[in-house]
Length: 277
Image (cartoon, rainbow, N blue to C red; front, side, top):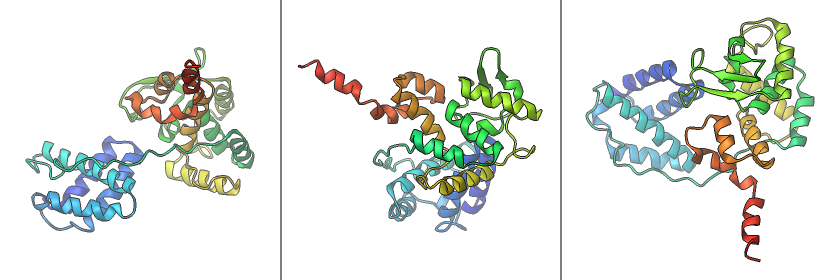
């Protein structure tokens, strides 16, 4: 199989089995990789070729080359399961360590300015619900009323209509603001909880529209829709909620992923060193 045909197969598999954003990333990485290895046989791709490719990508940023390596490892690992390869050309390439980046989230004043700027009720409801539940965009857009228990105030993500990133079933508690949004959405009488003008919403449309409102509100232009999930986690940590509880709410499979928010509660460390006084 040629690398081009193989990468097309990887993209098809990813669309069917991964989240929207993951499939989008596979498409992006495969497109870039095919610029240097399009028509050659998959078995002729060498470790040296990938190393050179990653070196070139690293000129853009370490995060770019690190991400590309992760996706290529998974792609070539899948190639082995499909009997296209016996050994992955990535197997001996060391993981690219990148500097930790602080997650981008909204301050409370920024958030209020943004909400006041959004004049589309459907988009406003999605944004408020995201900040108060920490759900990912696709988890929100595929949410059906059958997944919501208003009596006991929780949402169940059951992997039926949409597979969660961790592939695990999880429930998320609903606070009063989230319940208020759901109360208003009930009047829409749709199968889906969140729609745009009564029709199912495309994630790309919501992301782009959110970005337009961010720019219109004149707040940090680097903010993305996923920043709302970071906002949910950051605000909880700042209010004293434990990293363990935040990890459970976010549905992280490993608490190490959640530890990027730990620095937002520095007084815990301050209290510890005060014991030496």
